[in-house]
Length: 232
Image (cartoon, rainbow, N blue to C red):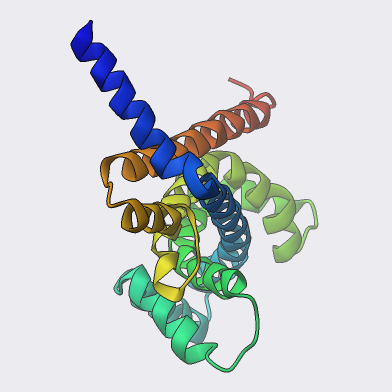
């Protein structure tokens, strides 16, 4: 009991020092807000870019194929942290936008390359007979794609898109490179201020785990709702 009491006392003292003293928990709360904002905007941008690039890769026009191929190869072939720093310190160096918006744009551009391949694979997974059926009903190419192919493809690619969103949340841990105080940066700040490594690192890990777990549950319910219309 003595050993446990000592451990509990040390744990309590360290917890207080890291999170309660000087209201350091506010850093983590602020970091959670930054992470969520960046992730949500980035996933929206990523889906929009991914859809455009997927259409380019599926297009019969050579120039669009080349554009889509170059974009995908360059983004997937370079580190996300390098892309973030180029976009922040070079592309948007003279822009007065909020840091989190620029960071979200960088992550959205990065995510767009991966989302484009997810969307492309989802569209290709739909039987060609669906397209032929749409055209036989008098629908043009755009109408067939938007009303018949894409709605079916969404159900197939939704789990992969969810996984990309989860990966994106964890990737935002590098926004500290451009001076944003996200969850990871808040943990690093607490670690530097208290000279305690274990508690801040475990704290940030737990926060990320909880966010992703809650998101996984919500996305799971959405996926079930999408699958209700399936005929098995």
